[in-house]
Length: 194
Image (cartoon, rainbow, N blue to C red; front, side, top):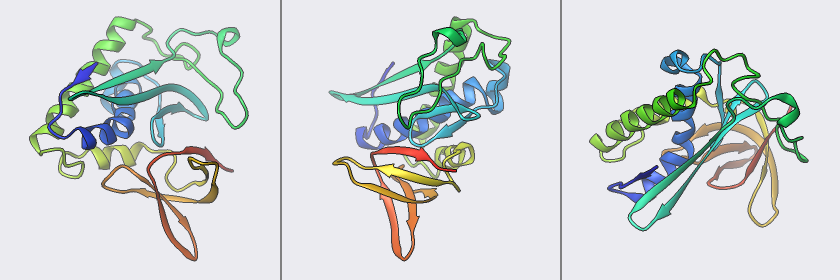
């Protein structure tokens, strides 16, 4: 799907993180229970989880004046078809394995696109403000990363460990590492620690 935002930078940030919320809500939580009926959460920035397993992933990329959003959702994959997780990666799951009564791809796609459109229109009406649109609050309410100890694998190979404490207005994950100030992470791999 491609969208033509007023502010491309803000929409990319909102779609990369908030896009997960759209898929999560429309494939699992809140009003999406009518579509897929699974209890999904988000792993910052763009993974949809059911329990400790990855159900879906979302990517957003600028393409000229538009943003292209890609969603990979495991629908009917069986246990033998799932790839083994790589080092530090989450195991995969599917709607079928999670007991979803709806594996109809057209209905799932319609639900995801309707949720994306609804949130995009709300976001646009408030000129891309994640607070006033409610997207930040919705995302943080569904984010399984918050309140957990995490290892952050930053670009360039730097590793940091701390407590994920919040998401700032730019969609960055805030990681507390006392006595240092919170680290605002815009990109990197996040590993949930036990």
